[in-house]
Image (cartoon, rainbow, N blue to C red; front, side):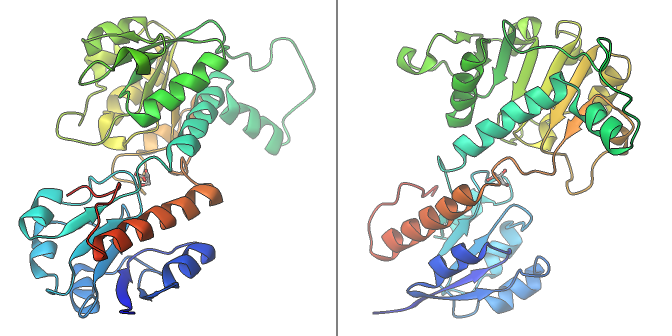
Length: 320
Ligand code: DGY
C-alpha cells in the first residue's frame, strides 16, 4: 500500500504521533519551534500533506510556493483564521480541520473562565499562594454567582450551544446573537437577539464564542462594553482579535465590567500588559481544548479526513 507522507509543523502528544505514523511517513518538523515559510517549502518536498496548527501562518505566498506533491493542508485546530482557505482552494488544495471534537473541552473551559472570573479566582489563588491568607471571614473575596443570571452568547455554533447547555445546568437563562437564527429545535429555549447591541443590554455574563473574521475583529469595543449591565462578567473563548484590549482593560479598571475570563489574546503568545495589572482578570494560556481525549480525537479526525481524501471519498472535516 502507498505510504503517504505528512509534514507536521507543531509538537504533538506522543499518542497522536503514534496514530499519525500508522500507515504514513511523518516528518515532525515543529518540535522545538514553528518552521519558517522557507523551511516549510523545502521540507514539504515529496510530501502529500502539510499539517499545521494556529501559530503556522499558511498565507497565499506560502501556498503558492508549496511543492506540487502537497495536495492537502490539515490544521490541528477548529479555527482556520491562520490559513488562506480561498487561496488553497484556488490552488486545488484540500483543507481539513477538526470540527466537533473540541466542543466539549472548550465548553468546559468556558465554565471554568466564567466561574474563575465571577468567583475572583485570581485574587483567591494569589492570597493563598503568597501566604497572605489569615483565615475565613464573611467579607473575604465575595464574588457573584451564576445561578439565576442572564448569559449572552455571541456565536451560537457548536461551541455556543454546548456552553448554553452547561450554563442552563447552572441555572442561567441563555440569550444569544448569531449571524442567523438557529432552527427552533437547536435553540433549546435560548432567546435570539438579531441585534448584538440588544443582546449586550441584557447580558450579565457575556461569552464570546465566535471565530476571528473581518466582521468580528474589534467587536467588543468601548461603545458596546458600555451597553452591558453594570458589573457584567466578560468571557472570551473564541479569538483575541474579537476584543479591543484597551477598552476592556479600561472597563475592568474602573469596575464597569466586574471581571473577565480570557483564554485567548490578540497577538498571542504576547498578552496586553494591562491585563496583568488587574486582579479581576482570570486568564488561561489558550488551553480551552487542552484535554488528552480531545487531542487524540483531533489527530483521529484529521487522519480520517486525509485517508478519505486519498481514497477519493468525501470527508466530514474538509473545508474546501
Ligand atoms: C482551535 O482549535 O481553534 C483552538 O483554539 C486551538 O487553536
